[in-house]
Image 1 (cartoon, helix red, strand yellow):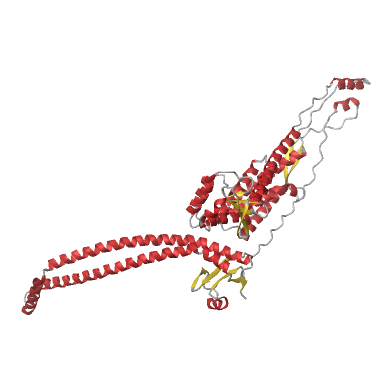
Image 2 (cartoon, rainbow, N blue to C red; image 1 turned 135 degrees about the horizontal axis):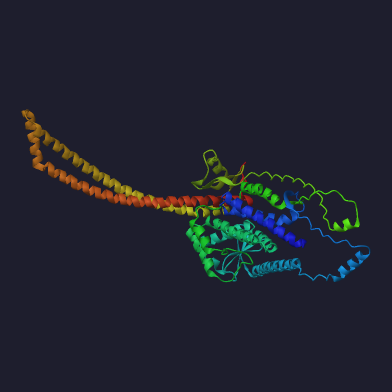
Length: 574
């Protein structure tokens, strides 16, 4: 009976913890899947720790008053002398033996153990299948970020196998994939391993098996699996040229079908709602930046008190008896003793609850070491992310490290990388930027052609303007001639000018000619404006591509530089 009560209390406390954690994430509008995953993993760990923490943590007593009804008094008629013993034996003989009742508590324990055994058997089978599949796979001789890559004909989609020392297993056709598809797959699976998702999902499966009768344990397991996939999708999108390409990769794996790998590993095509996953990828506007030290500190700061309250809370029931009328004590007599037989005795007052201890303060966060400033030097070209106050002395660095290196700050430490493999990784990461530069060169050439056409139109317009000035001058002469009245010299000069004009063409015909030339220029300008509109549209596309590539490139280059430090391929600048 005690075991059943304990399991029920564990499930209740776990459900409160899971619901509270989910509501806190929603209240703070946390969208980043990596942070949401880390928070739910903390909730799961807290739920698993409840049986261990409950007996040792100081209790938080919640007083609850409950009215206890007074027991009914049974009054026996007075019996004289030795008839009491005779009557007692007669009553004892007439009461039949109680029937054997069904032991519901034992049945509940049996049902719990059966459910637990079934889920543990399923989990064990999955681990065995994972081990067998891993042994049957073949080494490819390739690796990514120090993670071994293997291949197997028994899988149709990429999968991460092994709880500890995980490896990536690919279908046998992986060599035929495009470079974009292969990079996206490896980034996705590597992200699972970096976050230790195989270990986390094994713990989630154990938690679900132990609390299989609680619906929220199943909910927590499914959310952890789903958020892990979303975080890995974001890691793959960071190295993919566009979201549509990655969606096509996922749809290819989802459509292959074949053998299910739900039990033996973290599969790339594993997701409860494929349409929702594809929709999230196509409609998304931001990518997960991972769990920073500050976000982890926030999770611990909010989660530790929550786990403590849920684990240490204890209801203290205070029984309250109904008030009975006061009656003075009567002298003892056998009749009175018989009449008072079965009278209730008031329960003792409960002990004062122990005061709860304050939760331990979270550890102070360590300083973030993420990369925010870097400069890539390749020959005469320079690229990177810095400001005027952060940039190092480029010429001094060239004198010390040559014409090809990567300079950056990680935390408070200044580094330089000259390793050719790392520089090659950076060069490959910058391939999308080179494509954007190529597109920009094409737009610039189109703009040069439009500018040349515009210059021709401008020259034609200048000619029309000159014609118009001549027409205006001639018209002015005619107007002066028509206004001249008494000045004979002026009249003679104007008559000579008018004769000259009539000898060539009339002012009216000259204006018609100008109008026709202006119409031609206007038509040319309309075509130039149309060409300029097309160039502007291409420039807008290039700008959009540049913004997308810049966001992805920065994260990729930072990851390569972080990896170079971790692999001891970067040297400090003294």
